[in-house]
Amino acid sequence: MRKIEFFRSVPHSVRTLSAFFLAIFVLAWVWLQGGKYRPDDSDDAWSLAYCYDYAHHGIVVDRVSGYTQDQAGVQYFGKTYARITAVVLDNLGWTKTTGHILPLAFLLVGIALWVPLLKFFGFSAGSIFAFVASAPLFEPFFSVSVCARPESFIFMLATLAAFLFLRGGYFLCSLVIGLAAETHPTGGVVALSYVLAVVFGGREFLGHWLKKPWSVVGPILLGGVLSVAYFVWLHADVLARLPSFLLQSNSPRGGQFPNLLFVYFFQTKFLRHLPELAVFLVAVFFYFKKGLARSNLFLTALFGLSFLLSLILRHPNFHYAIFCFPAFLLLTLQMAERLGRTGWLLIGWLVLLAPQYLMIAYMNRSFDFGREISEIEEAVPQDPLPVLGGANDWYVFHDREFYFNFYMDRQTPFQGKEFYLIEDDGYRALPLDRKRWIEQGFRAEPVQDLSINGRHFSILRETARKPVGHSGL
Image (tube, rainbow, N blue to C red; front, side, top):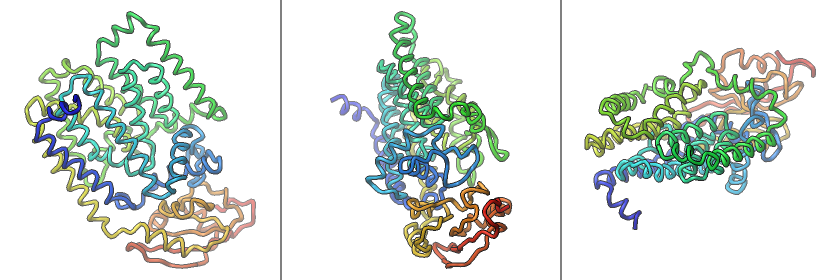
C-alpha cells in the first residue's frame, strides 16, 4: 500500500516525463550496444582482460598493454570485482554486450538504493521519482553502464554503505566500505563520503553516537579490521609498494588539469556538458541564496563532500563524475520543486540529452562490430603465434596470447619472437616513439589487408631482426 501511495503522490507530469526518460535510456542502451556508443573503447576490453587473465590464469599484472605503473592489473586492487565478473561471464560468454550486463545491473541497483535514503531525509516523491528516472540518461551514469570498468560497482557499494549506516548496520557498512576500497583506490573514499553525508545530514546519528558510542564505533572498527585483513590476504605481496602506487595513480598525466569535474565539463567533445554546468551553477546559487542549505543538511553535506571528492581525486578520469552527480541532480531538482518547475526542468533535460544519443546513434549507425571482429578473426592465421591488435580484437583473441597494439614494454615478452600485428587506425596514429620498437626491431611480412566499417586493417607477420637478448630498440 505504501508503494502505491508513494506512486500516486508523484505529480502526473513528473510520472509521464519520467517514463520518457526511462524509455530513452532503455532504447539507447540496447541500440548503442556492439560498440556503437564508443567503437574503440580500450577501457572496456582492458578491464575485462584484467578479470579474464586473473580468473583463468592467475595473472595479476596488466599483461595485455605493458603500460605504466608497474603493469598494475589487479595486483594492487580489484581482485574481488574480477572474480565476480568472471563468474558471470564464464556462463554468459566473454563478449562486448555480456560484459555490460553486470555494470548495468550494478548501476540500477545503486540508483534504486537512493530511494530509501532520500525518503528518510524528507525528499518528496516527485523529486525521488524524477531523480531515479532521469539519472541513468546523464552521461556519467550511462557511460559506466556500457563499459566493464568498476565505477558502477563502486557507485552501488558506496550507496549501499550509506543505506546500511542509515539502517544501523554499522558492521556491514564498514565491510562494504572495505570492499569498495579493495575494488579501486577511489572506492573507499567515495563510500566514506556518502556515509559522512548521512552522518552530517541527521542530527540523530550524532546524538546516538554521544549516548552509546561503542554501539556504533565497535561494529565499525570490527568491520574495518576484517576489511584490512581481507585486503592483506589478497594483496600481501605488494603492500610495500602500495604507497608509491597510490601516489602515482592519483596524479594527473599528460598535462591534464587535476580535477575530474573540469575534465568532464570542459574537456569533452563539442563541450556538450556546458549546458548542464550552467543549470547546476544557477541551481547552486539559488539553493544557498534561498537558505535551503540549512534546511536540508544531508544534501548540503553531500554536495560539499562531492566537491571535496573532486579535489581529492586528482587523477581526472571523467568516469569518476558519477560519484559527484547525485548531489548535483538532487540539488537542481530541489530548486525546481521549490519554484514549482520540476516538470519544466525534466522537459529541459530531455531536450538537452535525447539529441546527444540520437547524434551518437546517427554518427555510428554503420559501425558493425560483429563483422569487424569476425573478418579479422578469419584473416589472422590459427597458429600459436601471439597477436597484437586493437581493443576490439581482444574479444576474438582473449583465449590466445594477445596484447594491445600500443604495447608499451619494449623488451618482454617479444624478445626474439614472431607475432601478428593488426595495424589499424589507432596504431597508425601512435607517436613514432611508441611504435618504434616494432618498426625497427621487427621485419613485417604482409598477410592480408581488410576494409571494414570504412576503416583499413593490415594483418602483418612480424619477425625479430635481432637475436634474443636485444631489446629491439
